[in-house]
Image 1 (cartoon, rainbow, N blue to C red):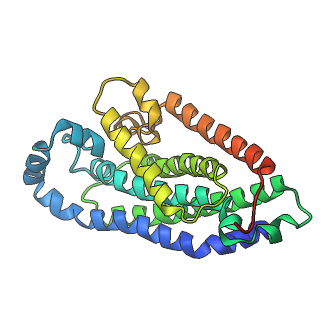
Image 2: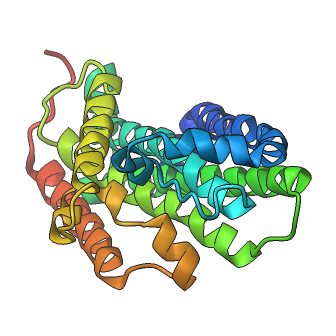
Image 3: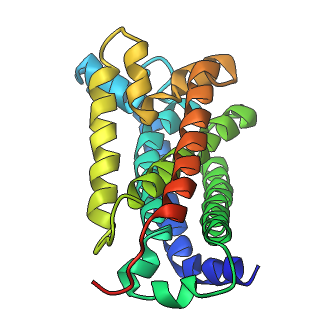
Length: 266
């Protein structure tokens, strides 16, 4: 419990910064919404000039882009990218922090098992990701209600927002899995950016095709906002795939971390 609380404390400041940054993206875009609705015809005309591939990548649907949910589906891709970077960052740093900060000897001589260490660290990071999502949803929901020009389905707004947490769980697990293969990570941000933008670009390329199987390659394609808005739910196949990715990579992280040699000083 002490280790869990210590990890919570160490992540507190960064979590607040990340949550405010992610929320700021939504607030800035939502602030533009009243003007867009006012000039709806011109805005649709502008977007219609975008290639269909770009509109698909950004989740733009010309039929409902001027509704609050349609507009939210467009700006949410930027929110998702930022959230994925945070989650990958936490995943990479959670199990590599002691080696990077040369405190591994101090931690590993404690009368606790390595499995307990991993559990405390992962639970603390996951708690902070959950806190990020709670703060984000409250802020985004309040902002949406301030700028809305008509009523909207709150359940659909919540379902779209919840995909941020699902994405973060997947990228957190991937980050933790990647980290256990490094003896020492000097900096986690370059790897986080590479993983997130690499998978996002790959997903953007795949979404232009008709092959649903190709969508399994990028987690960004597991949650089709258009499908969520039309069906008030998620695609079960991709939800199961995401859950399997999280379960397998976290389990592998446990096994590898428990057995690996960890050096405090290189």
